[in-house]
Image (tube, rainbow, N blue to C red; front, side, top):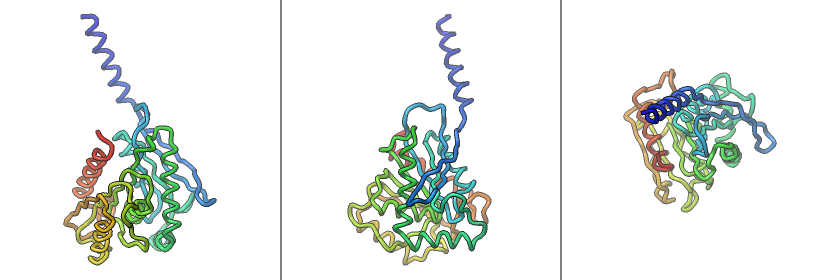
Length: 254
C-alpha cells in the first residue's frame, strides 16, 4: 500500500512539474553575407533530448508578434521553433509601402532570398535541442513563397508547408532538387494568385516528381491565417494548423 502511494505521489509530482513547464523564448543573432539577422527561438524546457526543429518564415511585414505567436504554438507541441529573419536586424516595415519594398528586394533576387532562407535553416540546426536530421520550414504569404524557394534550392529539410504563399519562380525545381515533402495550404479563389500561376506550380511539382499535397479552402481572400486581419477565417486557420500538425506526424512520427 505504501509503495502504491509513493508511486501515486511520484506521478502527481511529475504532472505538477510538467504543468509548471514554461516555453523558453529568446532572440538569436546570426549572420548571412555580413548582414546581422535577428531571429526568435522558442522551445519547451520540460522536454529532454533533441527533437524536430521548425523554421518559420515571416510574411512581408517582417518578423513580428505574429510569427512569435506561431513559434510559441509549435513549442507547445514539443518542437523547437525558430522564426527566421529575412530582412535583417532592426528592419521592420512600418506600412504596406515599406513591406512591398522589402519583399520585392528578395523576390527580385532569388539567390539572395535563398541564401537568407538557408542561413535561417542553418541557425535552427545549430540550436542545442534540435535534431538536425529532422527539420521542417513553414511560411506565410511572402514566407510561404520563401519555403518553396528553400525546397527548390535543394536544402536538406524534411518538409515544408506554405500558407497562402506565392508560387512563381525564375528557377523552377527539376527532378531531384526537392529533398523533402511539400504541403501547400491555399485559398481556392485567392485574388493574389492567377490560375496560370497556380497551374504552372502544379506542373512544376509534377515534372520535378515532388512528393506534395495541396489543401484548398473555398475562400476568396489571401492571408486567411492572420489573426485579427481583415481576411482572417478562423475555421480555415484551425483546419490548416491541424493539417500541418498531421503532416509533421507523417514527417517525424508522433
